[in-house]
Image (cartoon, rainbow, N blue to C red; front, side):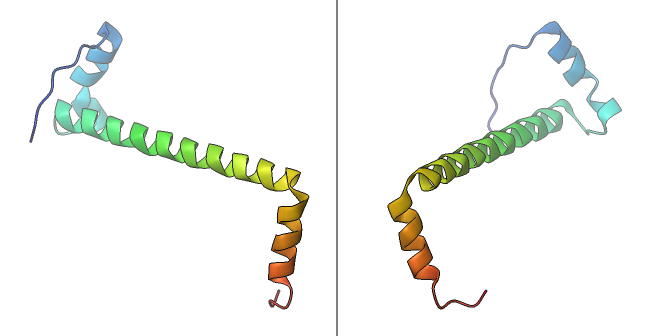
Length: 77
């Protein structure tokens, strides 16, 4: 597995050094898990922001609302 070098603050270094207390087998597993979770959270935030933008644009566009309503006519509820 590729490796990289990072600089950490003392509190973060202390956290990583206590990996076993958090149930991790080694420091690398703790860091990989933390980064994977951060990436997932950032992607989720980006999706939510995009959805909010689309909702705002839809709410402000009466033509798009009419088009959507017309497309839904005849569909079962």
